[in-house]
Length: 203
Image (cartoon, rainbow, N blue to C red; front, side, top):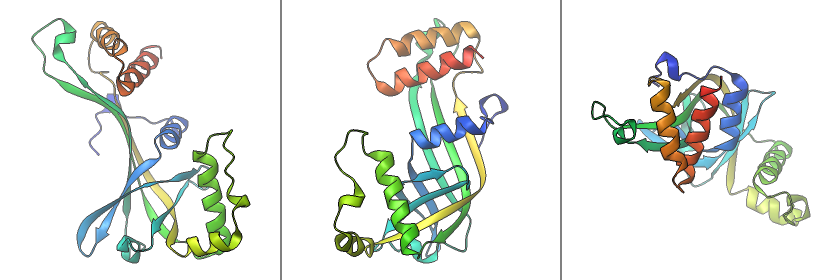
């Protein structure tokens, strides 16, 4: 990923926070000699520096993914930035965004206990704290049958590239004007980008 120096995220805790908050990812590999992507949720294991997830078994990407370097793309908040907000016509439109690229090697998980632990971690992550649903309450025979329809995996991350393009290349006065405009909209991504820009200015 092309990352100008001022847009690079180097703090590991910040990178992990984005991965956890925007964990529905694009998993890209070569399949049958062509680029192939699957969109799926992933769970980060910080201590292992790894990602866990699963394919639907009919998705044949899993069949040739183990012996290659794969790419996982996490897309954070993003929004359009209008040059009209700068109060000058000597500017062009742009886009502010956060994106994380994780590279690594995949292991297909065959151990049933590890598969169930992975599924439990995913349910715990995405279910709300007050949800009555708990995987341990589901009939074990049903879970066993359903698990035959998936292929679980672990991605050992070997490299992470992280980028936050938040108008850092603009004067502070322009950044403040952008923040004001973004905060005056109801669009969730706009407001998230405004919040990130504010934090960046306070550093």
